[in-house]
Image 1: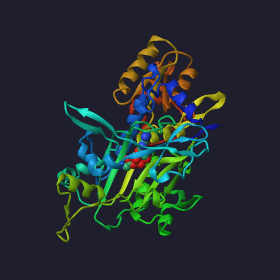
Image 2 (image 1 turned 90 degrees about the vertical axis):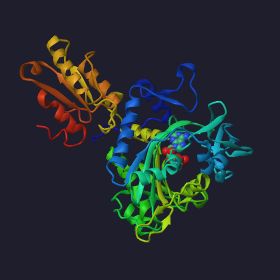
Image 3 (image 1 turned 30 degrees about the vertical axis):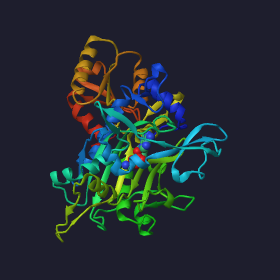
Image 4 (image 1 turned 90 degrees about the horizontal axis):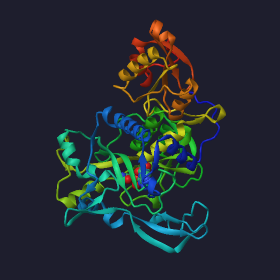
Length: 479
Ligand code: GAP
């Protein structure tokens, strides 16, 4: 993907304003002043989000033999969260900054150690525990919780999926969907919200089972626990040097980085960071975060934790349902371990792709260089001028292409203005109908990234666009 005249990346406030102006995302209840931590995805944002989720599902579920997907309920049985430990301990500590007086949140392990974003210290006398789960009434006398992660529904349904889909270890179960946390300080646009979506995998193995897959050949900045400066190296090297101790972690970090790369992200903007010992949950022996260099600093994009057999054991204990599987060799029964839990927030991934795509061309024209798979609109169709023959051909092309993709038809304004409107929302290809379309059945196809234009026969248009959109050939190779 060619990038043009990259001037500067927008601040998070500028990105928020851009997304509102173009119809991607606005504060929920905007006309009433908005509700902190809740966002509405408009006509472009909803398409972008669906495309991202579909790409994630395709990469992680459909194209793998070892992963099955589920879609669990949002309001969940309270015992699920008692078993998982969330009812007792899913909380943050509310604190107020002595300097800027803004409220903030810290993890229990961070109290007294971390500072506010303004550099000020938190007032420890203001510290108070804050439960993060939303509780809601169910019927007349029952209650449930809005799930704070999708993961527990995977554990609770483990046996039904493992047995039903006749799975064999090592294997994973995936889920994507809404999660809710009553965050003390939602901030940075969609980075930290109260209602968000997760795309999670629980990857199960037989204890001590080796990873049978190659570690992807990916280079990235690596920040190991206890280090202050990251070093660039390949994941294979990091594993060989025992910085990433487990082969499974190196493999899954590679998979996740490859996912971002496959959708056009520049991996120079990513790093992997190992959790310090005090950050780890009591059942976890290792955790790596994938972080992104946002305008507000390096921040967690995705966690990849080792959860051991903790969750399945808890659900077995609380529900009295056996979570064991049969070892085909020894004929013994055992509870599988979660060696990796790649857990990615949809909103954070979406923000990454917005930043990766956002570029400024000459005269402050914004171009979103999205990978076509993510683009909310795939094709713009324009009759060069308002003439009936041009419009008839344009509308017939539009009606045909919209059966497959999200396509817009635009006949208003200069052709330059129409191109600019589509560049700004990331539409990869625009089709223009002119005199040649009437005389010789050709249209002009324009590439967003290079602004190059080529003539193409109308009968070849749908097939050619399909190949271009799914990366089967490049625009340059078009004759
Ligand atoms: N099941 C493990 C789990 O939920 P987590 O680190 O709490 O782990 C995983 O969350 C991911 O979910 C994060 O890396 C982030 O991408 C996303 N996430 C968590 N809280 C979020 C919030 N308040 N707003 C947006 N995304 C959030």
